[in-house]
Length: 121
Length: 106
Image 1 (tube, rainbow over the protein chains, first blue to last red):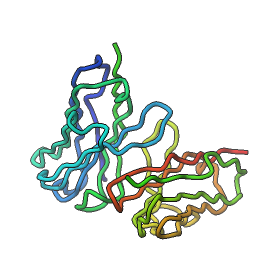
Image 2 (cartoon, rainbow over the protein chains, first blue to last red):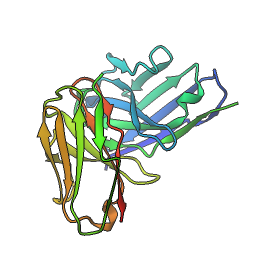
Image 3 (cartoon, one colour):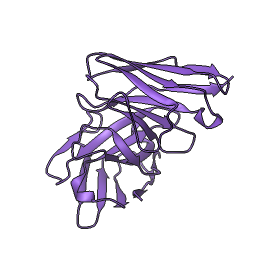
Image 4 (cartoon, chains in turn orange, purple):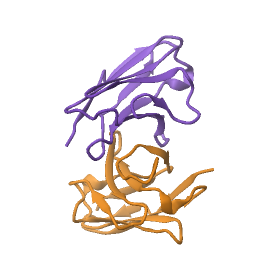
């Protein structure tokens, strides 16, 4: 059974940093692209960042480019999102999502339960 | 950036009725379109990929159609558990989502 378990969310002050993790199990992690998708309270879904299976290629939405860094540790079956220079606009539930194959541009066949990031003073 | 426009924003229907949801892309996405269902407090669930293919475990009452810029998600004979928000997503030119359609009980 595929499982994605996010952690690391919480309350952070504007300008602060936070690192999210996503522990994956039930599939061969190193062969699938992964993404982070966020959802602000009461709003729709927004793709944030994607990473290739090897981790060599990374991609970002314009809204987070230069502030967020996606990475993965295939030996630990874990995906990360390092977030810095956070603003209130980054407040959202952050989902870890598995691509349907090795391509970063694809639908997401499994999602984690999400972790809430709140940016507030 | 490819913009996806979903309509209507809200669809009020009764159980047993058919739901027809629309997703229009600002430029062609070929068949690289997916549909998701999201219930309150839950993560999205993949329903349809590549415009018309049902994901694993998705009931046959869900069907997708379209190509290019115009797509439709049809839910035949709504079940109580189908009342939710539905999002389309394109993966032709990066990844963007539509604003969602809420299917509510009339």
